Amino acid sequence: MPDKEHKKAWLPKKFYEKELSRLQIELIKLQRWIQAEKLKVVVIFEGRDAAGKGGTIKRIAEKLNPRVCRIVALSKPTEKETTQWYFQRYVHFLPAAGEMVLFDRSWYNRAGVERVMGFCTNEEYWDFLRSCPNFERMLIRSGTIIIKYWFSVSADEQEYRFQSRLKDPTKRWKLSPIDITSRNKWEEYSKAKDEMFAYTDTKISPWYVVEADDKRKVRLNCIRHLLSVIPYKEIPTEELSLEPRIINKGYVRPPITEQTFVKDNYKDI
Image (cartoon, rainbow, N blue to C red; front, side, top):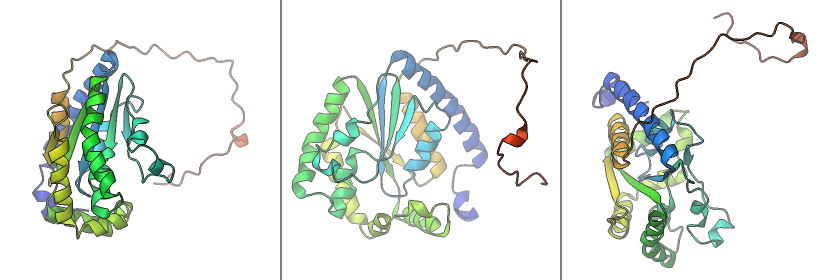
């Protein structure tokens, strides 16, 4: 967990929680607009390990309908997937009309971790950089909205978060062998990001860079930006009311002794 001195530099918690609540209400309005207008929205989150992508995605999605807003976080490709067209496994998760998909890492794995860690060949890497703009252009022309975020975190802050994950048993799963190796490849990842931007930061599908050292700020800034790049209007909700409950007195409940209950371990607290 971040220590008190570290968190002092963050946006005040009271303001953060109030603003996050306000923005999440706006996200619900955006969700209704996406449904009504049958939009297809893809939001890509990329950046270094421990840059805060997962936390931001969680705050975007936590109040939304999971049938409308889906999170996609793929593990490494299977043996079969490695023989397919590179973009094929991602196409399967693209949104239908009225859906928004949040990619926690995406097809840009090839230009990042795969490039730096040597998980792809040089030929595969350059083929990706040449193909990616055309792939995204094809999606956009078919009606898909693509929004790409790069989370920029400093070396000191990344190291702090790695150490925090190491000490916190609830976060240890976030620290992988690749994360540990990446600590010594800061410059290689910087070069890979620069090269990726040179080819894929296009007018039709630009990258948006978010400063990510302050976890609270990065979440608020990213959500506000997301709301600003998809023009939406509030759709009036149907007024609902709850009439007095109708109780059927003829129902006889089976004996509770015939059911298996989970033990109440906290009844005496």
